[in-house]
Image 1: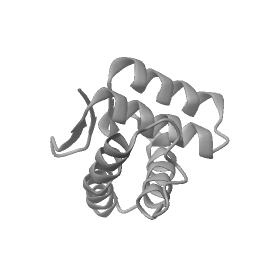
Image 2 (image 1 turned 135 degrees about the horizontal axis):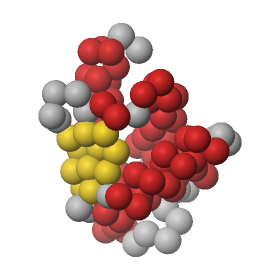
Image 3 (image 1 turned 30 degrees about the horizontal axis):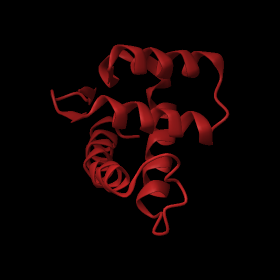
Length: 112
């Protein structure tokens, strides 16, 4: 299991493969600087990301996460399926709206 945690102890907890898949999808979609790439790779290696610990780059990472999640949720024809079978792709896409909800709540708290 892996998690993305937010300020009130709330966390999106998913299978490690789904967590790594999301952050891999982010790295595939965006040209990121070495600091953000390191932060994402570190989160993947440690099975978690805590927004309380990210500092000033958290808003940039949140923005990339949100854009990627929305694109994946809206992918009705499965263009982003890559190597997932139907069941795995459905599990992945079904987990994303929960994370999007956490992100939007966090944005309201932090006035992003």
